[in-house]
Image (cartoon, rainbow, N blue to C red; front, side):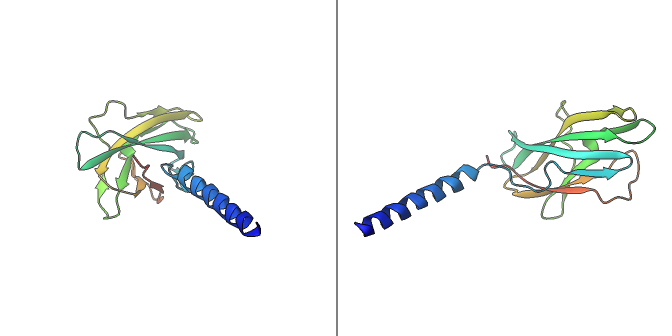
Length: 152
């Protein structure tokens, strides 16, 4: 009888562990989602990452959601084109310009701009680095986020 209780307990613990591991599958695990970086009087938060459908089987489309606050005293600009995706091989991938939903606008002092940027990268990437490299001005700040690509 004691052996049956031990086996039953071990079996139940195994099931609980299995369900706990399975419930985590498919979720994005990244320390940098939700993190804010500061450059050029802008507080930039990478709020979310989502996997989207790509028309190319050898590529995958990701959507990055940003929140940008202008902490300066003058208006400033920000947009999806200010960010590039660097893959593990060191190659940089610019904004997917064929998507009309890429964000970009002028931000008045003290105001916030929220929007999404779309980027097409090679398929089967597990993790990428998002780099802030604005077109309009130089930045001496090394601003980047490392994010995991969500599972399909």
